[in-house]
Length: 300
Ligand code: GDP
Image (cartoon, rainbow, N blue to C red):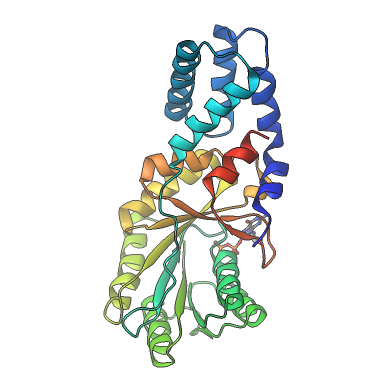
């Protein structure tokens, strides 16, 4: 896993610099508080959270009579952590149970980084000595299957696939069947993300999940969201949340944005924790989401 802190700090330093210079201004007056709020909103933290953070911060600064930059920074850190949920369980369930592999479904709109995240996650698990089977259930594009096969070859995980146009649910079923027969630890199923119509998506993903559940429980449904898409990503997340029971979010492309604050909004809206973050296109560019490291990078 990558050095999350250094990588995040690089992508988000503009936000940190902005906030810190505001916090160190001599007078924390009305305009400064407003600017702090605007800076947080610019980072995609969301109006509700930004307002709440600034309101709490103002009250605390007043009560404590604090003015020192470091102290205010410390309070802001606490408020951000409170919004992100510092104590939330963010474990990705990858352990086999009852003689069956853990089953993870990876869902999300095309282009968000599903296949890449599937490959990277497999890499982490294989690196930890686990056995993994991947399922190429995005059968609508031959390229998607090929891409997953490339990842499988790269990280040492076999890939179950079928011809283009095959039923995604049958690929998912066969993947779980193979994983169970071979006694592997974890099965990861990469699904199609065509957001054509909500009903279509619902039918497709719902069927994949139902069919898998004939064989095994689904332990984790990871929604992949592209951090650079801001509000649009949030809308997509809502649609998926209506369709399947999401258990965690993998936020990708955090390396390409200073708007990582979307993490706060996504969790708040969906009530689902961000568990993984993508920080690049390479096989090692996946990290577990650590709120403290994230907030420190935001404020660096
Ligand atoms: P899918 O259609 O959802 O399966 O998306 P892909 O896995 O094919 O990814 C789409 C593009 O995003 C590819 O070019 C990936 O290399 C790139 N990508 C995925 N995750 C990340 C990330 O964390 N950071 C960056 N910079 N690029 C990423």
